Length: 188
Image (cartoon, rainbow, N blue to C red; front, side):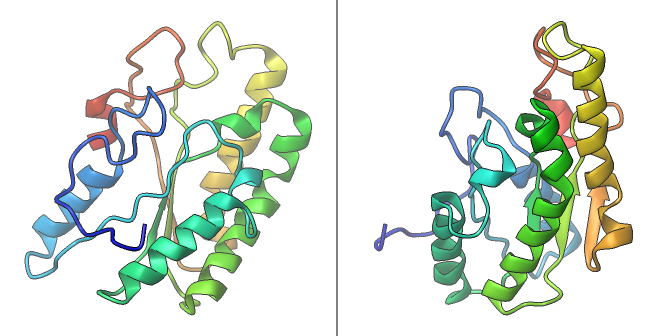
C-alpha cells in the first residue's frame, strides 16, 4: 500500500502461507549488520512460497509487486542485492526443471534492467540438501529434476556475473515432508 512504512523486522517476514514461519532474510540481515555496524539494513519481502519461477517472471503479479516495493524502498535507501531461495516447485515436471536455468538467468537480467543496477548482487540459496529423500519426493525421476534445478543454482556464479551460491550443507528438516528447513538451518 501507498502508506506502508518500514517496521522492525520480525518473523515471519512474509506470512502468505502457513509454512512461512521462518526464513533466511532476517538472519542474513542480522549477520550483515554485525559485519557493517554503520549500515541500516532494510528487507523488502517479496517471497511467495510454493510458486514456480514462471509465476515470478517479468510481467507477473509477483514481479510487478516486487518492483513497486523496490522503487519505494530505493527512494529511501540503496538497493544492495537480492536473496533468492526458490526452486522446489520447479522440480515437479520435466518441463519446469528443464526451463528453470534459462528463466532464472532471464529474471536476473530483468531485475537488473528494471532497477537500473546492472551489477546488482544476486545470492541464490541451494535447495535443502535433504530435499529428494522424503517419501513424497524420492522417485528417481523427481530426484533427477531436483538435481537439475540444484545444478542451475550451483552453477549460477560461473554463468552470471555478480551472483553467488549459498549451499545448504548441514540443513535439517522439521518434518517428514523433507522440503522445508528448520529455524537453525535457515540461520546456518
